[in-house]
Length: 289
Picture 1 (cartoon, rainbow, N blue to C red):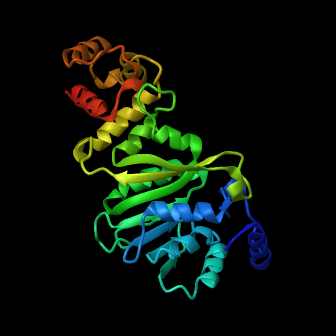
Picture 2 (tube, rainbow, N blue to C red; picture 1 turned 45 degrees about the horizontal axis):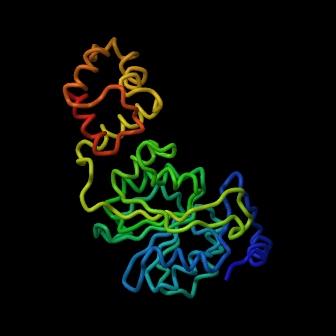
Picture 3 (tube, one colour; picture 1 turned 30 degrees about the vertical axis):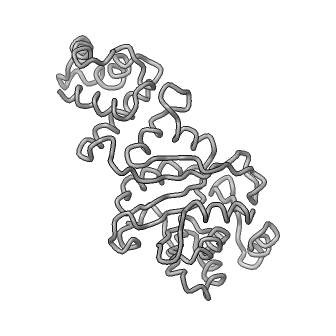
């Protein structure tokens, strides 16, 4: 079991330099929390798990105890050596992959079987959005994802319309997943201790997408556009974000846009932060004409 003393010894033995600020290297050391994460992923014998950022192997150990087959992804070569030495006798550790997770496709780890791969990881705070976008792209293979991230970011992801936490990230995740916060983790469960509380975010794939696949890219582009001006009215957010600088391309003007929105039963003075994902899809179709 890895605790702060064991981590210090590994750092001495393998000449490791831990960088919490630059690399987001805060290692979970509470065995109860590690066990709860392994329970949240819902794995057992016959399942396949891919761990993002295995680090020194604290969570790896808990995941292996489920009996599932495990692929551990870690980009730091020195950490890969630690993992190799620690788990060389573990038969259900199928592979340690030295790579940035963003450079991997998940199809081979899922053995080509859709919605069969369990994805889990303690995510560096700076990598949260890129990894969520990556899971959106690779969702065809994901059965469930369980990610440890900053509490405030998790609250944004599960937020409801018209709340201060509601954001473009809420809608990005909602395209493919039903998110929920499994539990919170206080800073003293990590070594070194971060300055913020963390949350374990569970992502379960939607059985039926809210936005049709062929419209997804356009809807997310619209979301990013108008949430840049989320406090403005919808009409002004669209004008400031798109139509004003694009008039040279002969796109519709502000008055025509307002008329089109009213004709479709969409109030032009609503604020972007009040629209749910289904309404965003409808709005995109109205703008498309």
